[in-house]
Picture 1 (tube, rainbow, N blue to C red):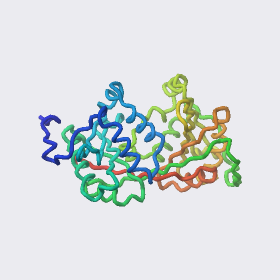
Picture 2: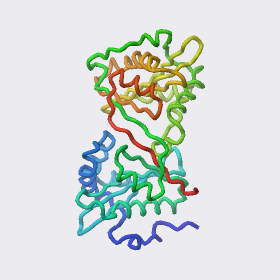
Picture 3: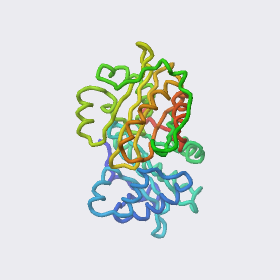
Length: 327
């Protein structure tokens, strides 16, 4: 039988480490995260988490029960933090997040000790894989993860465009003059799914939960989309009878950003991407002029070039790393 958490002596790992008490530690962890990640920038989900941490109550504490973690405490001060949660679409995978150390106390082994504790936490819960993401260029963090056995499996770039009402983007689409763009139907399901897996390979679904239902066109998708309150639309592009790619747009009513996903098929060029994105962005014309967020894995140079040609500016790139417990 696998030992439970109660049988772990955290003091044996380090006397400064203890489990997070969300209600007690929330404000201190929020301060730590703001201080630790201010140079990298904090995205919308990170800002939401910080706001929630600062306003913890009994209800929020209950919500965090499935997302445990550890803190490093000295003289009553939280100097380090690490969190973890189970990937909801891969139940044998746990995802590490918010590995943070107070800048004045780095290079003391705090992050390494916390990471060891959280790996142990996942291991006794029969985790097959432990995953995380790290900002590209953060060499100290990446080296730390590599020392603990993590290895890189890919990277995803994040882009933002101010809004569809921003200054128009001028570009040459002559290379895509033969591309016909139309609304996707259920008959396009196989092609759309193939392009999705090409652009979102399986190895990138460990650290970032991937809901396949959003990419399988059919009755279920149509009903979910109709009742969701955040309407999605798929467009497909074809050259003659050849499928060239698809683009998914999602209006986020309750978020400050709308989402765009470009899924070019193998062999499609930048012009095809531009020709798909141009009508896709019209989906947002009737909504508030919020920024548009796009993500794109590597390499897929044509997709990256098309997004930038349409006014999407690079925000950051996250490297995905995995630790296989059964390797």
